[in-house]
Length: 301
Image 1: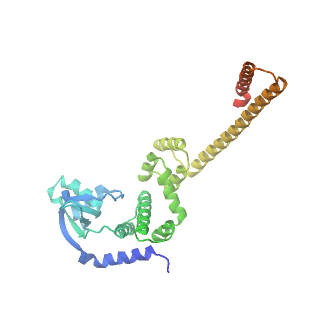
Image 2 (image 1 turned 30 degrees about the vertical axis):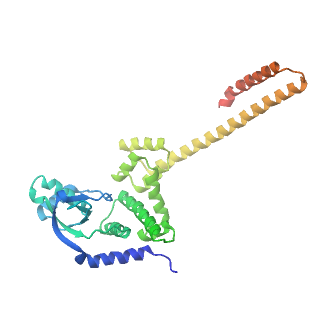
Image 3 (image 1 turned 180 degrees about the vertical axis):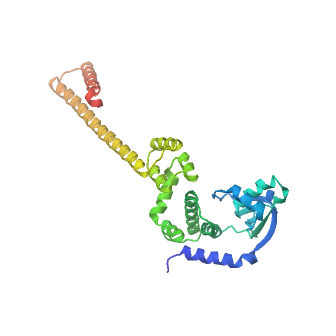
């Protein structure tokens, strides 16, 4: 049996969508109050002022892509969020902008529809690095769900790599950023204040060092990858020294305990008839001895 190739499946699905677009869609002007932004949308609506000016001069040249929503008479936006936001603002100036040209797709709920939509968006526009990361995470979730529902075997990461044409190592970098980067730094990454390479290097650091770097970025300090690597090396050196010190302390403590045990055994061996009161006094003396040894400066260093 040949290996499952989701890329081929998606490519054929996209071609089918394009071929059937005219027959499967309806063109209509829809009031902006009846349009709903997709919860799955993670793309930035940047250059809003440029879009508003373009609509003022030329109107909306490319209709939005929408599908029927669960609510009666409402439509979910699939593509065209910036055009929608620009029209909402313009409608406050003039009611003529309150209706937007749209292509209405028949509602589809299958996973491949969302996969093809994300991949179509990817090929139709240049996503930011943050958007690319969100695409990767969402596509991976959809692949996992599709595999589960259709009893398909194969490594999810390999399928994802094949679908988006990206190496496993680069995928791992984006996932590390999403999972480990401090939320405030993640916002800086979203706003394109820090690069993917820098974000990845920072994500390796502990929370305290990430917090410090966040404040450095807020003060417009020029942070380089070399700076991050130096911080990481310093943190690793500190952690190594801490581990050595802890191991040394444990060894010293064990030696003190063993010495105290030996002292008790020697005294007991030489005083066979010692009573319980004297034994308790002996133990207390040895505990005091251990405490004094542990409190010595040499142990704390």
